[in-house]
Length: 149
Figure 1 (cartoon, rainbow, N blue to C red):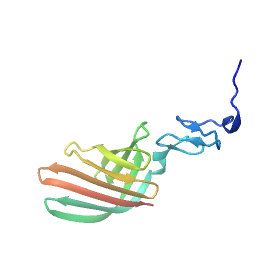
Figure 2: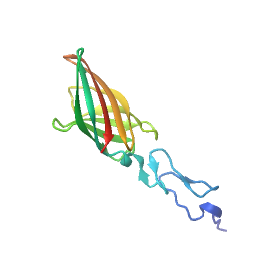
Figure 3: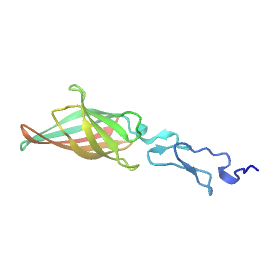
Figure 4: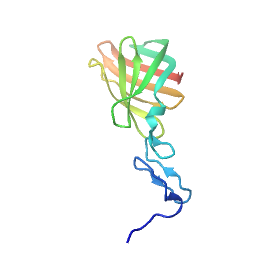
């Protein structure tokens, strides 16, 4: 005996752990996936160039400048992304999306001289990040804000 699915979910194939809602036949996606069939990684909608400002504070003095920031995917884990803070110096931080609400935490960087910590948000239009570390110069904090181009 073979059981055959009936109703609105009969021909619906939800991907990446998504489930079909029997009331309306639409896929309900798990965190970090989106689209009609849950086929798209949410982080892909965040990638691109963001135009904004960076404020750097070291030992009580600060400076702000305009800058572009690149937001990219990083590896196969759908939560991981990379934000390039300084293109000329090839400086970037690794961030992990906390949930499907666009919040992230920093989990590493590419500069062994610093151990950045912090958090922020990224979505299809804006990106913010607040970072902190300590160096031989003292406490360093960085605030980054940008709007997607």
